[in-house]
Image (cartoon, rainbow, N blue to C red; front, side, top):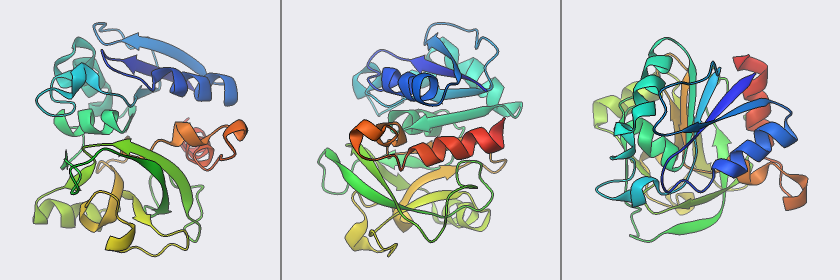
Length: 229
């Protein structure tokens, strides 16, 4: 499978993503600069974490106007795969490729810590090889990660099996106690209706290397490889 990792001004997780995909998983990776308009024939575009354009206005609000995003939108609308992590998730909502919005954390603070995720969707490629009875320890690092959507939109997301993950306890309990940022329904990630665009706030690329003593995030990438190629 061939991946393209986009770098925006302010991206800081692009090299981490390239390392995981290329060195740990042995995949072909193209580096994509935000001013380019050629996706170089990739199968999946990755929008990495960071602070594109310094998070001015709103996180992802300026990055959606980068030249490459028009091609990313076309790619997604034709059924191509796109994944946004943290700032990338914010860019996807700003671009209209995913529903809802990512608002300031309810404590108005930047949060950087490990959280536990409970897989929800049974049909999304990111989740198909994950065990719903398990939880996955993945780090978060964001100041604007509170998922919000109007009531009707939120219900449609739930009904259409679009919720990828919920914040939970290590045992899988989903409650306000284990919600780090105030996201509605403890939502940590969603997919679109056609299940080819994925967004999540936690960073699986930071939990994919044995040297970090945590490879829970690697399982998400392996599921993608098995069901998106």
